[in-house]
Amino acid sequence: MKKLLIVANWKMNPERLTQAKLLFNSVKQGIKKIRNTRPNRNQRFSNRVEVVICPPFVYLSALKANGAQDCFWENKGAYTGEISPLMLKDIGVKYVLIGHSERRARGETFEMINKKIKAVLKVGLKPILCIDKLSQIPKDIQGNYILAYEPVFAIGTGKPCSVERSKKMRKNADNNFVLYGGSVNSQNAKDYIEKAGFQGLLIGGASLNSKEFLRIIKNVAI
Ligand code: PGA
Image (cartoon, rainbow, N blue to C red; front, side, top):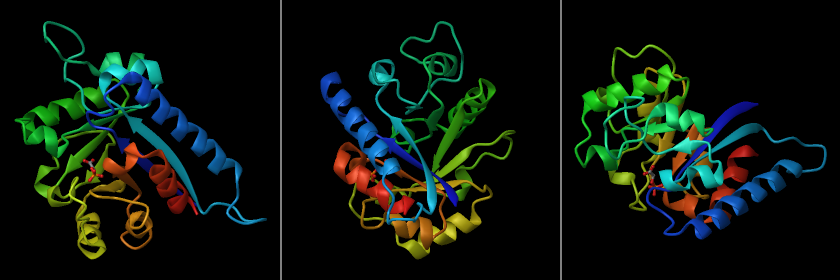
């Protein structure tokens, strides 16, 4: 039985807390239901799936969610608008996305990302470093972090990376826990796990539709 990590990146969605609560609760209930049903009588799921949900910061406390989409590298001080790793830890967050391509595109540098990973590790949270090429992996990080291979052309485009190409990248990544992200849906999810050998998925658009997101979870668990 493999341990898989399925991460939902809600990005800047949904627009209201009431909608966020509805989405979060229906995913939570759906997961419970999946866990209580067996694929067939006498059969067990073949993989154990841990689900991480990364909503916008302002919804974290209300949802008691376990994932965040970013954080700053200092734990306190005069940094207007920033959120620290310690603050996230204090409200129950366990995983933090770092270096998402949508943040890199708006000016986040390799140095900033490097500092963020170290700060997240220092307080005992788990960073999920998003990369599009191997050169984006820092060499001097001590401690375990999760990698998410997200080719930019596949993010939010409905054009997922081919299984063969993603498999090559997974093999070359010098890290044993690697997720795939980029236009994942319930049709292609299982291929990235079974054929390309990823240990999980980072899901944007499809995580905003609870039925589709639950289908993905079920498909990879069986
Ligand atoms: P997508 O986004 O699933 O909508 O392609 C993935 C991501 O940006 O993490």
